[in-house]
Image (cartoon, rainbow, N blue to C red):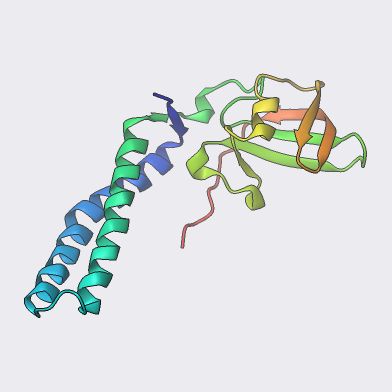
Length: 165
């Protein structure tokens, strides 16, 4: 069973979502299904079918969250030395071809937001960086072609996750 590294903040958010689905959403959907069933003919009962579809999606999410949380490995990146790239490291890379600098922070899959500079440690890009240190050169195999980077800086700064809306 593969562990699912994540920040405490993410674990708390997922736990709250699971609790909400089990204690609030599940009973509400069950009540809607009961009320729709009481209306009679289920073959042409749109409310009943919509509620059953919603129930299926919700139960799927409950299973997904339960699995994720059972494998959760809460990591406090502030407690790790970031001499080598690891979970929670912020990495500055210099593109060898363009001389442009990019910055990424390595996070868990549930926290990943590439547009915000947060990449999953399970991504091929992050996997090729893990364990490396400042001054190392790394070649990364991307769908658009191979890219060469120099790791110019590895450090920790508190991770700010984008708000989920």
